[in-house]
Length: 102
Image (cartoon, rainbow, N blue to C red; front, side):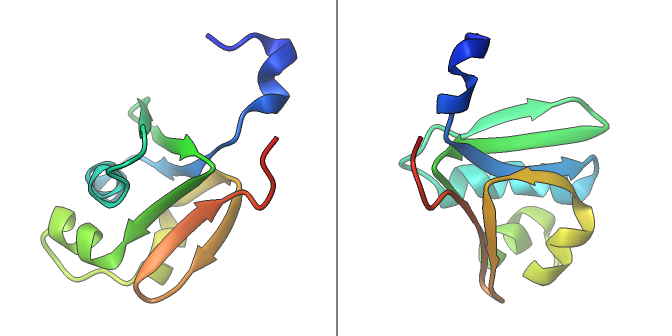
């Protein structure tokens, strides 16, 4: 557990999804698309927090593979309850990141 006085030093970024099939697909996609990172999952049922240090990427290909159907990356924002970090969305991927490291 992180000490509250050190909370500002955290560089975790990533989405917080409303529960559902897109959230579950994003868990799989996050692990596939970020093999060199420790991806943290906090699944509360009603929402799912997915995070990694400094950068987390989800690709369209991985989302489609996990969902078993076509998926447009811009549609991911419909399922976001919140997020940590900055966001960059292209037709092929969504990237959560921090420009500066604390």
